[in-house]
Each structure stands twice: as C-alpha cells, then as structure tokens.
Image (cartoon, rainbow, N blue to C red; front, side):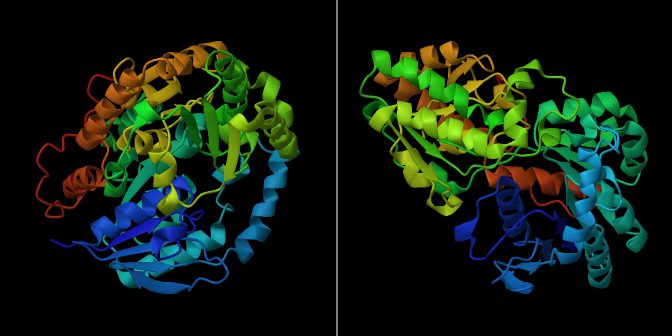
Length: 432
C-alpha cells in the first residue's frame, strides 16, 4: 500500500539534480526520499536558495522549498543564548520560535496534501505545529544529533508523546534516548545511514597510495588540528606520505557541540568557536608547515568526491566529538579504504578495530600518527582492511538496506506500508 510521506528538515539545501549536494543531512533527505518515491508519493521540504525553484519534482519526489526570510529575523533571537538570558538546557533552538514560519508553512502544506506520515529530521519543536495541523498523521522523529539527550527532558518528553516512532542514526544515539526517555524506549530504533552504489563502484588501490585523506568540515570538533600534528610525526618516518583535506571551514556554534561544557577535550578550543577565522589560520599554518605534503581542496560536491577516495591509501577521521554517525567513514569504507578513526560516539559501531581499520583515543596525536604509520608501512594491511570495510558496508550501510528497514518500521505504525524485505537486510552492527 502506498502512503503519502512528508520529509521535514529546515536546514537542507537540496538542488536537483543532486550534483551540488554537500551537507550530510541534505544527502540523507535526498537519498531516502528518492528511494521511498519508488513506492510512495513523497514531498520534501528543503530551504529555498536563490536560483532554485520553490516547487519542482525530481525522481518522483516533490520538492517544496521554503524561503528563510521571516525565520532569519525570528532566529536573531538566538542572541538570547549568547547573552545567557536562556538556560543551556533550554536554548532558543528548543523554543517554538525557532524556524516558526517554516514550521507553520510546512504543517499547513502537509495538511493540504493529506500526508499519512511525517518524517521529521532532528528538530523536535516542529512536532507541536505539525500535530495541531495534522491530527491524524503519524509523526516519525529521526535524530541525527545529541539534542534529545542534551536538553531539558521536561520540554522534550511531552513532544515525544506525540511521536509514533523515534529513529536514531546509531545505537550510540538511540541508547542515550532510551536511557533518558524510558517511556519512549519501545518506539526508539536505530536506523543506520547508507552510501550510494557509486561508492562501491570505486576502483581502489590503497596498497599503491601513500596519500592520507580527510573528508569533512574543517572545524575543531573534527580534530583537523590533531591530524596535522600527527602528520608532522608521520612524515619523519614516511617522507613520501601526503595529506589531502577535503571540506569547508565550517565551525559550528559551541552550544551545538558541547552545550554543557562537560568534555575537557574542548577546554583548549573555546577561542576557535568565538573566532572561527583563528581556527582556519591554525589549519592553514599546519598545512604550510607540512610543505608540499599537504593540500587543502576546499568544499567538494558529494557527486564528485569519489575521485578523492579512489586516489587515497588511508582515510583518517580524527574527531574529538562524540560523532552521532559519520557518513564520510562509510563512504571511505565503501570505496575500499582502511580507516584510522577515534573511539568517539558511534564510530566503533562502524569501524571494526583491527579488521576494517584502527581506532585510537580522541585527541591523541601520537596514537593517530602511530596508526597511520603502521598502515603506511604495510601496503597489504591497507588492502586487506579496505576490502573488509567494503564488505561491511555491503552488509550494513547501503541506502537500499536502510530504506528497506525504514519501510519495515513504517509498516509497524501504518499497517500495509512495509515493502517486501530485502534479503540479508538485517540492521544490526555486527562485531562492533
């Protein structure tokens, strides 16, 4: 049975065709939507960006883009957080004023389209407006961050009562939700992100390359400064190695990363959140100190990223943040690369230490250098781990498997909605 599905997320820019996708959640919305649209009518609500149509269809998905003008004015109230006039447990983005215009417009459009199911990504304060305008719709809340665990349960718990299904992008995120909201635990399920088939079609040769690759935002929580420090040590032993940094300078507000200042690893990084240009200068100096052994490629569209993976020998993801998931890691594994990453958040669910890569402690530049050096010294280990990572992605982290699981979960709250199961599509992180 086909069901009418709405996907809701205010921050995504989803131009079509998909050649200019950059942001992880834009990719998630796009990849889930176009696969669901093979069986169901789907409308997705990205933000409107100049030069894009407010309404268009692509691959069976209707894109209804919402202009941000009014919300830009409303969201200026986030200055209350900076002035400490709001509680850290109840920041402005938890309030009903955050993207209030977007929420109202989307809620009414969903009502006019008579959608059966609303798949809401991350922003829990939209639950109320959507429910009031759509009393009969099933609401699915899909969490890609820590916000349900970070903020006041007295505000969030009543919202969760209106939700038929809670999805988390990893077991790490799901366990936090189940611990804090036991009444919602039975409705909470992990749903891993995936990669598109084109990553599995990359022809890798990690044994032949000494290039170390990072893909992601150049920001403090991703540990780029730790990687640069580690590479100075690596080059002393492996002077033929090189480093490629792919991604934009994009320093998130500190309150999105460690809102309660509980993580001591961020203590020495606070200045970079108030002055992002200082972090960019730090990264540029680190690259310069590596001479011709490091290159900053800047922002690369997701449709063009495969060539970066194809030319690398090792993928490094040195995050000091407890990652909710980490899509670049599974992209690299799909492309046949061994991974060196930190034991941060959900990463140990993705990377099997000693089999598909090597895990080190957060913020440990010496440990990171040793792991990279170990792989550079052993081309066959790089090849073996890369092949094992690709097999793990085929088993657990493709969008086809993720959407098959999603439709199965939809079927629990809307009987008849589930598609036929995909063979071998069990959604369990094995040997993690």
